[in-house]
Length: 152
Image 1 (tube, rainbow, N blue to C red):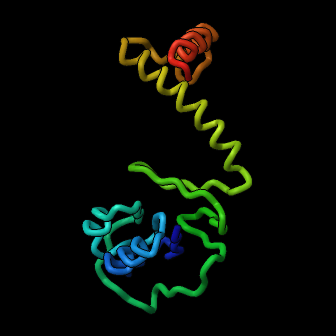
Image 2 (image 1 turned 90 degrees about the vertical axis):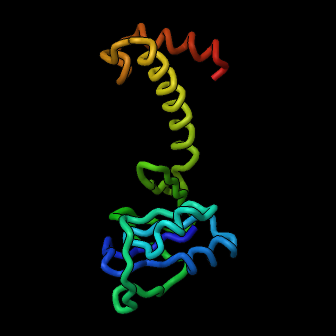
Image 3 (image 1 turned 45 degrees about the vertical axis):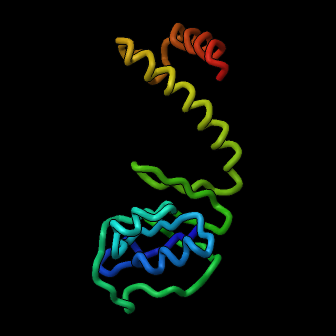
């Protein structure tokens, strides 16, 4: 995983499709920058996740230079250390400190199960008051039964 600290500056591109393709071919799992990419559409079509703030066509080597590999960086105001877990989707990218990964994963599984239950309830016409967030114990009881029935 390559995480690029561009100091939230997309005036110059952090990388383009040639460099990102080379990273993919060399086995990179993904790339994230708090700056921009040149060739954003081509990068988006690659079989590797790539996240940036916005497209950025100009290149200017005086703005961004690689100075270290496997060192800590700040990316989008988040500290990122070697070994941290980086997760991205269509909404955002988050960084999970390595020492918290198991705890966060366990909580994420629980939250995902509850949100799947909530979505099913809302699609069926349920109001969200007391359901989301779960402040009504009756909803929690229904969730427990739903979970048992779904094997989740």
